[in-house]
Amino acid sequence: MQRLRSAAGRWGRRPDHPVTVDEFSRIMKRFPIANDVPLGVAVSGGVDSMALLRLACRWHATERQRSVALHVYSVDHALRPESAGEVAWVGRECSQIGDLLGVNVVHSSLAMSWESRPDTKDLQSRARDGRYGLLFDACRQDRVRHVLVAHHLDDQCETFLMRVARASGLTGLTCMLPSTSTPSGVDIVRPLLSVPKSRLVAFCRASLQSWKEDASNQNLLFDRVRARTVVQDLPEDTLALVGATASRMPARAERARQVCDSVINESCVWIEAASPICWVDLYRLRRCHPAVLRLVLTTIVKRVSGEDRVRVKPMDEFVAGLFDGEAAHGWRQVFGCRVQRRMASLVIAPDYTRGAARPASVNWERVVTVAEHLRQRAESDLRGVRIEERRRRQQLLRTADDTANRPARVHVAS
Image (cartoon, rainbow, N blue to C red; front, side, top):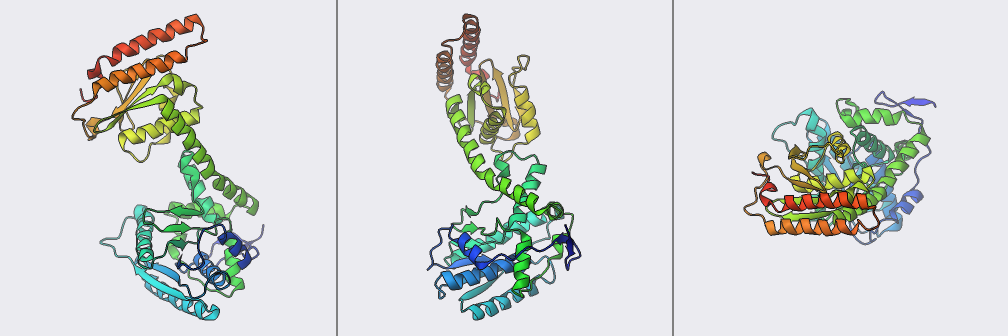
């Protein structure tokens, strides 16, 4: 495959045929955006967002009411000397495009302020958080419910490959959705997720639309830039395949969440104190697929510990030894929790030594009820099982009952 050298000096794929306004119009019909409400567009001045700006303006001129405002938001991150000038340039481009197409384009410059420049490791994430905060505030002031952003197929593939490299679970591989609702009340709309960057570059060149290059997008200290160098070398068919795989992940993750919720409802009883304690029926979990089992335990651990993330490798090791007959039955400190195997059950409680809220009182009658609940559930599963297996399980259940009737041992603070 032939390569062309960009102005920034990097090798890129030969530009594809330009994306068309008709394609963009068909994509926009998938989103429930009324023709008579103001719409936002996030534009940084890079090639992706300038292509989105022109496409959105031409679509707005033909498909929507021209008098309705198209709000364009540009954020000055105040991290480079030239950033303020680039934002001002975007404003001038908006005026020219709006006058040319007869569209009411309203440009807003949003300035970030820093008490101190963040470390390189946190720079992109903090800049992103600050950018979206300013963007959502401006949208609310302008009564904008939907804002278009220029994430494209290459961005989706970069995100997917980065999360694969970090060994993210199924839910972590969902990547970006075409539309995302946010707590701010503003929906982020990504109409270009199926469009390769090369087609956006081709569109800008065909439209004689210039753009600005951000030198930080070439800085290999950032994980995303390193991922971008990998994606740039992917053949077009491979790029499309990775993008299609990423686009299927949200539906698969949702199905996995439904299965996970069902298993938790059938297998777990929660003892609500100042912090939740979970009593898990191991007989039920034994029948789960290992991937479902990992997701179930990860979900429980997050709720009990309050942690946002559970590392994949330690969870895999924990799951691998969960049904080991020689596994220790004492309390173990894992994932910000204290976990104890109790024959037919698994108790997962907060680790109070890590600062979790210690319950003032626990309804120990509820603990006994939990044991009875699990005993009855397990006994219903014993029908049709061989006599020898039934006797073994009943012995385990009696042991679990004896343990449950000593509630002080469940109190992890002791």
